[in-house]
Image (cartoon, rainbow over all chains, first blue to last red; front, side, top):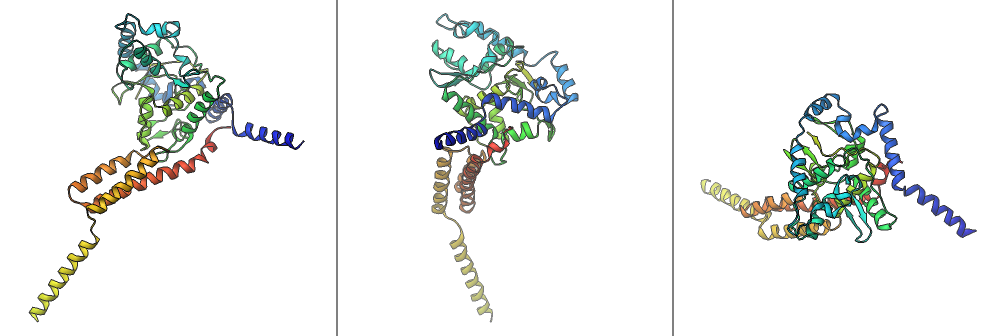
Length: 274
Length: 104
């Protein structure tokens, strides 16, 4: 009887302290529903433009001739160019690499690694005897932009397999998102949940939902198309925390968590932002 | 009287110079402060995310030391060390509080 009571107690404690990823996702949607009762949550895939009508109009006009178009074209050309051994990127991915971005990052149960799309692209290169590409901008971002473009309209479908390492990686990404850091002691959550839709100086802050659906992004302040991990580094620098390397384990875990939170939302990459 | 005044001024200047030599930092002090800062930051980096400003402070400290301004160099190296300690303190506090921000 005593053991049974202890087991019951532990079950109650564990279920209250450790929510499942799906419980987290639903609670997050509820959070934003409460904060923005009149907003269609799927609009949050458009970042700050979900909250700012004036900026949205300007952005929609810009979308007539989107600045990331060059990246898509360059990415498609690179994607279709065979490696020295005659193979190509299409040989490395399911469905020839077309319309699959919504499944990334994925947790590889064989290696125990989180595989982001950019990681998989470079892995494809090294598996075929090619040099890996730089992570943040350039050809890798362009190939990723092309693959994102072919995935538009699909729904984010990140899976956390039944593997304790996968859940641990998800939990690490979650902890990172909610942990304050840097000289300014900001967590990702402070800007993108607490202050989502508010102005920070002249910039309106995007919300957490949909933050992973639209990458890579052409940012006007960068003057080029860059990857999500480039943005992670920039966020860190903005709160005066020393950034990690792109595709470091910390950032891949963060992307894993962030992407799962956007599950069910439309993929709309690449995108343009201020 | 004039002689006495000259002696007094000289003695005062000598005392002032002596006291400056006593309080001003020297290269050895800077090196000790630098080693402490480097050890603290290196130890912290294995556990937590450092501040982006700490390495800048160390570089500035090195520049000051190269220019012979050891007092400033010690001050900057000490600040870098304190930043490392603060990064650890924040991370330790956050270990127990980050869950409070998760929607339930």
